[in-house]
Image (cartoon, rainbow, N blue to C red):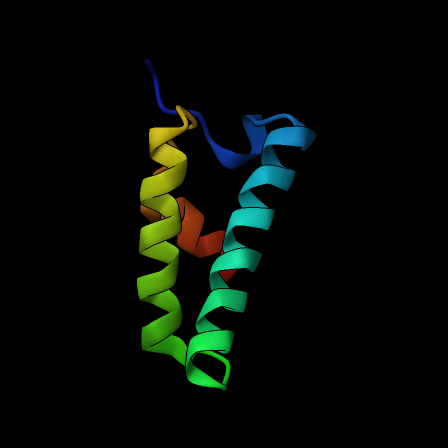
Length: 69
């Protein structure tokens, strides 16, 4: 399957990705009592990127990071 760019995804797919990232940050906050800092946020983004690759979206990490940061 050819990797799609974020702009090629449907709105519903983008919403799922946003929800996964939001939930990841919320889980971090519940566990640590604070918001993640830059390095920690990058680790969360890498984990979420791995999950969305598994969902078949195939967005490269560089593009995903560009959307978040």
